Image 1 (cartoon, rainbow, N blue to C red):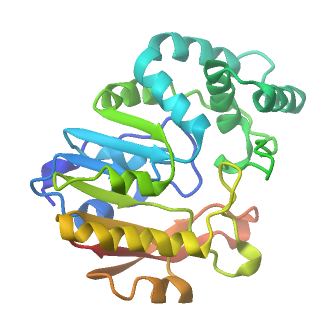
Image 2 (cartoon, one colour; image 1 turned 90 degrees about the vertical axis):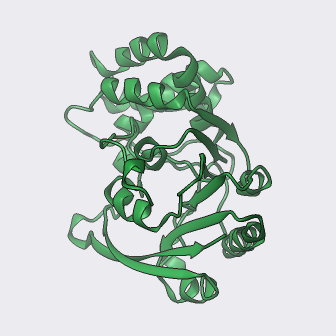
Length: 279
C-alpha cells in the first residue's frame, strides 16, 4: 500500500468499543490499494479506518440505522447539528436521571435528527463506548458515570470534511459486495467471533452476528476475487476463525489491547487476525 494512503491521524467523534484507531497502520500495510479509487467498508462502525485512509471515494455501510443517520446528518448539516449536540454536554446532563430519560426518549423517537442528537449524547455518556440494543431494538447501555464527558467538536468538523467523499447507507454487508467493482478495495471489521460461548458480545442494532454470518462474509470475499477485488477481514483469533480463514491468501496475526471488559484487571492484549483475500 502506498504510504500516501495514510492520513494525518484523525479520531472518530464517537467512542467505539473495538474501534480500529490503534491498528490503522497495520490495516494500511495489509490492504492492497495500489490503483484503487474507492474504499468499501461493510461494517463502518465508528469510522476510524476510512477517516485515516486516503481514497477518492468511500462506500460505508452498517446495519445500525441510527449510526448511518448520524453520519449522513454530519455530512449534510454539520454546523447546525454540532451546535445543538454541544448543548447536551453542559449543565446537569451528566447525571443518571437525565441519561435514562434521554435514553427513553431516544428509544421512543422516530425523528432521525432528534435521535442523532440523542445518539451522540448516549455514546459519550454511556458505559465504555458500547453500542448495544436488546431484541426489541431498544438501546440499553447503562450510564457511564464519567466526570467530564468530552464533546468532540473538532472531531465532528474533521469527519464532516472527509464525509463529503463518502456515501453512507444502512444495510447488510452483502449489499456492499454487490456494489463493488475493480476500482474498489474492501476492509471488513465484523462483530468479533466470541472467545467462548459465555463471552459472546455480538448484539448490535438489535440482532446478533452469528457464525453463519461470519461464513457468509468469507463467501462474499471469495466471490469478488474473480473481479480483481481484494478484501481484508479483521477478527479475533480463535479456533473458529483459524479454520474460517484457512483458505485466505494471507493471514497475519497481531496483538491488540482489549478494553471492553468491565473488569479493568482483566483487560489486556488479545490475539487478532487479519485475513486477506487477494483479487
